[in-house]
Length: 260
Figure 1 (cartoon, rainbow, N blue to C red):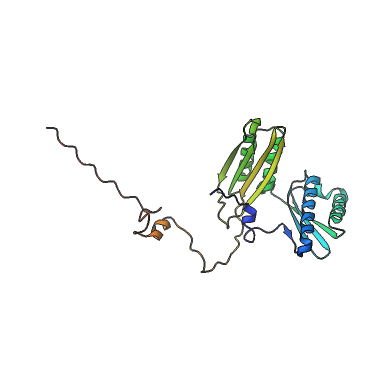
Figure 2: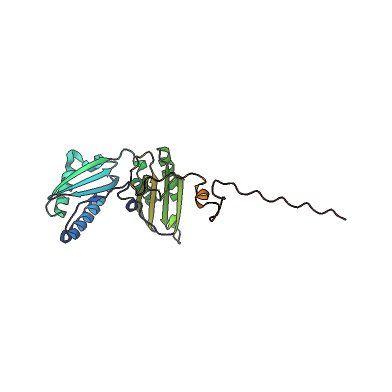
């Protein structure tokens, strides 16, 4: 209990994929890693208003491919592609003169992207909008767009209070320990005048294809109500009083004795 695991790292190779795709020898690994961090920081700062959800970096022998997942591709491309050329030249300098190619992937439903939802709530907090109103509006919008569930959590000096606290809202189903469920996770920070407020978002998109994972010993039978009691057996702990078995009826009370 209490061991917080990042939902994206928890689902790597199951329903999520790596955001940096390359292999480097031990001598070049540190340089490539710091180069990736510098590229992400540069793009996040330059495209702050472009609703960037995810940055995927792929490296080949002498080429770097950067894929930007954004809800506003027009701001990223710029007039006649000028912004793309400027960013390509800057990233090439960070990578030691390697050839850089930038791809743009448009997000057609930003209301169902956890990172964009968290950033939208953070922007509203910076504009002094009530955190309750911002969170409830984002939750309701995501559910109206077809999400199976969403959970939002804000932590910090909410409303300018002296003591920091955390509040969260949840609607629908958000099973964090079920790897088959396509849970999307996003985090953003609202830099207000009275401190930084962290915003976390867990979003169950639903209607996503399941990723088959081979398990030793065959497929696992789906669990039904009453399985817990049946599995333990009548002699085990819990007996027949499982989730599906009815509790035994109470013993009838003895009739009161007649007054003499």
